[in-house]
Image (tube, rainbow, N blue to C red; front, top):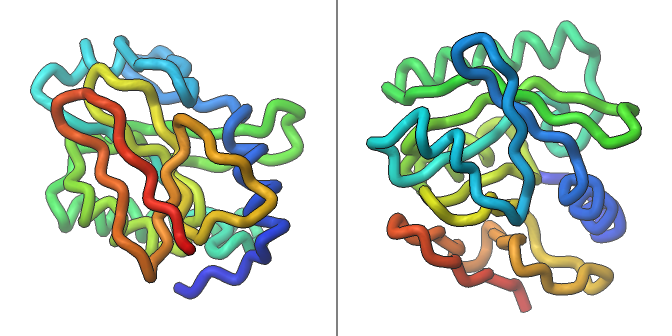
Length: 179
């Protein structure tokens, strides 16, 4: 699905995503994730995984849709993850002022290329993808707008450019920035 958000909207989304409230569920308990911080509870829960990701199917291309449509897309994403043999847990993201919230999935040990394909196929501009032991990273599937300053925990993955791949060993990834 082509992304239709303007550069200004991409900059606004990036700022919102950086401060949003991210949660994932394990053993009936909702646990927090924060961009720029490691996720030791995720690491402990899934000791065999080298990488983790968070994504949704809601409001593709930042086009607001009815809840029933977002739930249908969520079921389609779940079917796709099952078909692809992916492991996942329920998750969500909410704006700090609670004006928006989206159902998400925490993916356990996704391959980078497959994860990016899911984000692209379900029209997602912002996802999270990070390596075990490393800080959680925001992964923006768009060209970096001029209005955005470089950020240590944001990777820009422009479909026309090389992708930034978080290393499996837990080090920091390099950002791919479009010209």
